[in-house]
Amino acid sequence: MNSFRYDAAMRPLDRIDLDIITLLQNNARLSNKELAARVGVAQSTCLLRVRRLIDDGVLRGFHAEIDLAALGAGLEAMIAIRLRRHSRELVESFRAYAMTLPEVRALYHMSGTDDFLVHVAARDAAGLRDLAMSAFTTRDEVDHLETMLIFEHLASREMPLFVEPED
Image (spheres, rainbow, N blue to C red):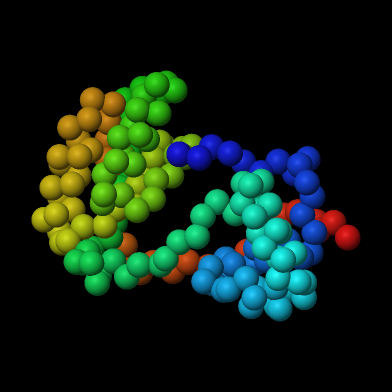
């Protein structure tokens, strides 16, 4: 897991950087030529800026959005996990284990009643039950789990800006 976080004390982001980030978030397949034209800079400048955003850890990857149903996943769920005890070792152990499971789409370490929220995909209800019973309830560190079916999953493509662009 990449634990690098962008530090605002590092090189400040300007309006062009933020425009590049927004455009790539909405369509990571844009060519450098198209990206440069849309932000109004030379192609070489755009390429350097994208590489710098990657090197600085601002852009952490480029991904394809997958239709899970096309791959045989007929069901998605969130599994709330509560650990027996709270220690760095148990949290890190569970996190590392969960991320090895191919059914795990996302993992959220949270505060509150539950310690983790795990987004999973399964072929069907029997597959989900088997995943919960064999992958999670058998773990010594797991005290409780609750499974919630996902009927619909929408993701926003809007990027919240919490930094002020440098001029």
